[in-house]
Image (tube, rainbow, N blue to C red; front, side, top):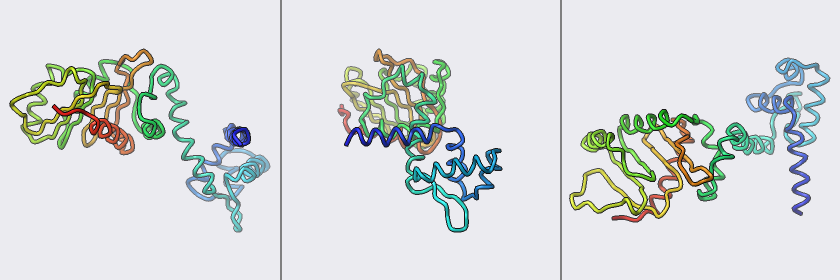
Length: 247
């Protein structure tokens, strides 16, 4: 059964290994087109367009409607949706070859494609500045998860934001979590035995930094305001927040 599935998977990848067929799928995802329209969009002959559409039809990725237009099938849409995470990982293959995402729960690795709307920042200072700016501009809440304490220079900024009523949560290593007899309004902190990822998050932006294979943070990070990315970062933070130890 496993070998049979591998064979079917190999056939599917073979059909998707053509720039022309992929282009047709993306064109048809937006609207139904006749064969002549496909040929014109791809700047190929009608014969070539027909040949590629026949292959996609045989693979059940597209179907021809009675009026002569072609559409992506439900199966084809599923394949394209699952193709998106693979495309994202392929785009940043150098980064993922050097960083370990498998320290995260499986459900978040499976949703990795949701980061595709974020920008990868590889410059350390730019990355740190982005995270600091995120906390300076937050209006409703700010969540942070890091291997260290808050930088001293950010102290006044954090204090101002707390006084404005911004709700803050921080996850830090257990050894850096200290009891404070004077509870600070709007501020909560919890500790983790291990911090596998750096997260900075507000109501409008997110910053995520994965560890390298050597278990170090190089501060190359994904940053952005894309809703899917923001939701992924929020869900991940809340997952660890529930596991965090209170003071």
